[in-house]
Image (cartoon, rainbow, N blue to C red; front, side, top):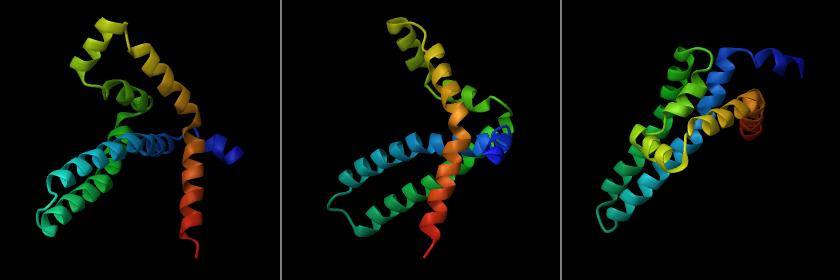
Length: 134
């Protein structure tokens, strides 16, 4: 328990944890895109479907690393800034005009999740270790 408290303030832990959380939506977006592409490639050569699937897997390997590098280079609070800036600016303006400002809600969500990032990382590591055991 004390180790988790000590690690919870380390920027590496937050960058890695937020990279895992961001990969949830990134992986879902890639999966939806791949399903669409595979639907369009129905009846085409297996090589084309294989290439599309390979590109999706490659993206799923690269995006978490790119997110980690971006968050690690951003310093403290970068995960909250990234969460609030990841929304398209025009979509954010449309939402702001229709429903009021979206920033406080997004900042509150990111701040709430930030407290649990070390625990999320611990659970993820435990799952990896369990799945690696024979």
